[in-house]
Amino acid sequence: MAFSERVSRLKSSLIREILAAAQRPEVMSFAGGLPAEAMLPKVEWADMPLALGQYGMSEGEPALREALAAQARALGLECEASQVLVVSGSQQTLDLAAKLYIDKGTEILLEAPTYLAALQIFQLFGADCLTVPQESDGPNLAQLRERLEQHRPAFIYLIPTFQNPSAVRHSEAKRAAVAALLDEFGVTLIEDEPYRELTFDGGSAKPIAGRLKKSSWIYTGTVSKTLLPGLRVGYLIASKDLFPHLLKLKQSADLHTNRIGQWQALQWIGTEKYQRHLSELRGFYRQRRDAFQAALEMHFSDLAHWNMPQGGLFFWLKLKQPLDTRTLLNEALANDVAFMPGEPFFPEPDNHHGHLRLNFSHIDPARLDEGLKRLAAVVRRAQLEKAA
Figure 1: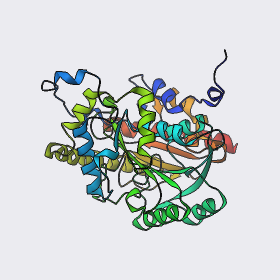
Figure 2: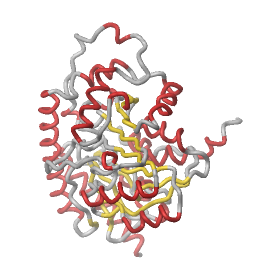
Figure 3: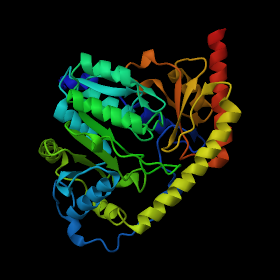
Figure 4: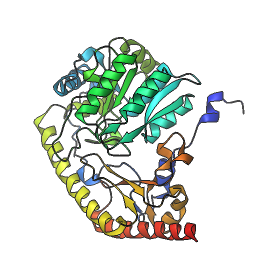
């Protein structure tokens, strides 16, 4: 078949394959970034206006755009509702940005590790993915400056708050320094913030986009981690020079985001009900995080290093004796355990063996200890075989 040249770069999503394999009820899954079903809010539809069944504006529902702009301004991101575009999950933002910027061979800059599905999109469009190592408080600034001096990336893609997969939250100092570097070199920022609201220590920080004085930017978020991922409602807010182009790309992609999901999101965002829900969500996930930490200390303390996440949905483990964690998958699944290998979160996976991403939000706490015990046994066996 004569497909486009781009299709030759299309990679299947390992996480989607693992989640499909983990559908069996007996599997204890640490693989996906799934919210806990017990915390999905009950939603009402009875008052939804019938007119929402009709086609809508490509930009999104006006009242929702106003609410999202107000929320962003409260974080310190100066913007107007006219800069807000409602998208089909924040994943669509990455697709639109890739279409806007990437031709085959276009250089872009990423943290290493970075979000798996972003890598999938950027590589599909043919990007040359340059990386900056992620430290415990954000990107390595010396290497970031070096990259910017030696290259002219079309954009930098960052997840500064409870990054997926590393759970790192950029410090105030790193946020300020990154913004200054991007302004100095005139590089566009794509700032992805799906986990911002899932903070367990009450910490919050002004978005990097809100600190820029010259550079263009796209800031993106979603209701998938706080309300219902099935709504597929996300948003982007863009600097005024970028917004018209992103709007045209949205129009050509799907006309507009589903209005029914937008209406449901609007019933929550900016309300006291939403704040109560977020408070309950944080408390629930904090308890699950703490239980996970205790179980990891019991089963993995001799096997791996990790930092306890202050938010988000993941633990990021680095094995003390590195091995290709992709080779553990089949045996883990045979033992009814699923996890996410760390290698695919790097543009050059074969150069980065020895990490595991473990989700703590979804698994039933009653099965947590047994699941990590089995996973640790799989790791130990593999390391003994490697050493033999």
